Length: 165
View 1 (tube, rainbow, N blue to C red):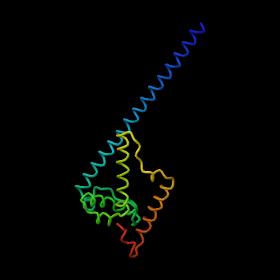
View 2 (cartoon, helix red, strand yellow; view 1 turned 120 degrees about the vertical axis):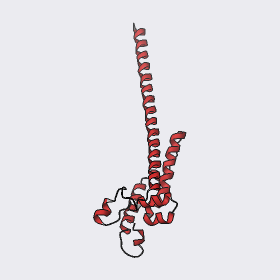
View 3 (cartoon, rainbow, N blue to C red; view 1 turned 180 degrees about the vertical axis):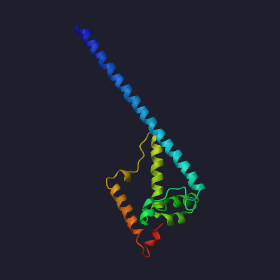
View 4 (cartoon, helix red, strand yellow; view 1 turned 90 degrees about the horizontal axis):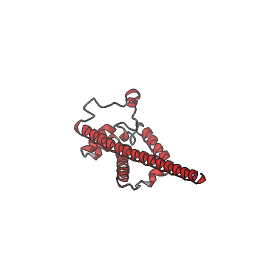
């Protein structure tokens, strides 16, 4: 009787362990599929928006969203001019894009590199991350840069008014 009980108990434990492993694998598989779907949908949205911004100039057409900060306070936020800058970048006019929003033009290459490294990491199953993004001081530095840009682009004097959209 003791041997049968021992065998049954070991069989139940092994069955439960294998069942839990299969569930974990299934959840991991589903999570990977969702992540792949997320990147595919993100790429489709980026391509679609790129086509819209290439075709239509936000300075001419009024169906693009308007900045509420600029509309009500008559000041430029850090994102003001980004739509026109994207339109200018898609047409290859880097100087005009920098004139609309310098911060966006300077940070866009870093964001694109980060996005493509994430997609490449998903495809190759290897971890390719920029070490600078993982540093604890990075969010604080980025927030400080955005706030300084926000303040300086609203100063109406000679060197700073070039940052205004």
